[in-house]
Image (cartoon, rainbow, N blue to C red; front, side, top):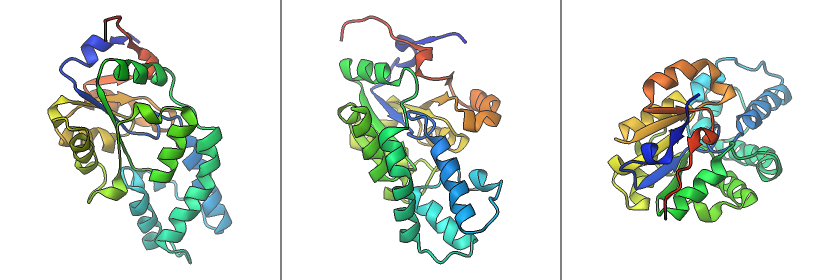
Length: 228
């Protein structure tokens, strides 16, 4: 795959906003494991359509979906606490950054480009991951879908993040790994770079068609040497 240099992908860009899972973090495997364990412990068959049905939903919205669609004894808050507990150690010790992400974040910081995160994950897991990777100072604003009215593909989480960064939407570049997230970025009036992820492999061609850019991971972005 041909590399994209930073001068090209960041032309006219004042802020970069990242999704977390499957985009900045190689973490989708965690949720596959958690979902399968959850349904097994509840003596229920794993619904193969689950990932498609909850794509773009926030942490709270996903818990609400589970309560509404499955015969569970847990409340929405019970589920959120359970999932946080099940995932916390993984995000602290096992979930890595996507290749090339650290160097790209350093480049953005050095060149005065604001950075944000717009994620469907919980604030607790986001903060745990950023601290574990030592990159909490490289992200200027975090917004979770739980903080806004509507999840992806609606633009709320991206527009809120841009507002917190103090940057106009048309000066923002989004990195996303799922179709709903790409639509959310475009619905916010932002340019989008799609990121490949093995757990969304079937969507690869559609992601390439929808987004302005497509990368396998952040090592596909060639860092240009210019003075900060």
